[in-house]
Image 1 (tube, helix red, strand yellow):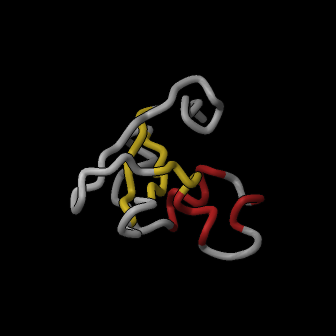
Image 2: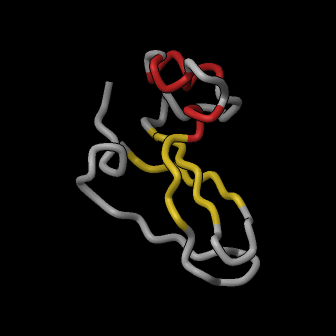
Length: 80
């Protein structure tokens, strides 16, 4: 298992909203929102079930970003 620099506070990734260009807020790992137990499941197992092709193979951690201005959500793949 690799280390995600965003999950571990080693790096901040700024993303601008594709709709209104405002700075989006990082809301955590995408798969943590699936159900109440998702944050406690093994990360590599969740990557097999998150619907994103090859994020495990490509060592990418999907993060949810939300625009505080317009409410747009984006999934950003962070390299581990």
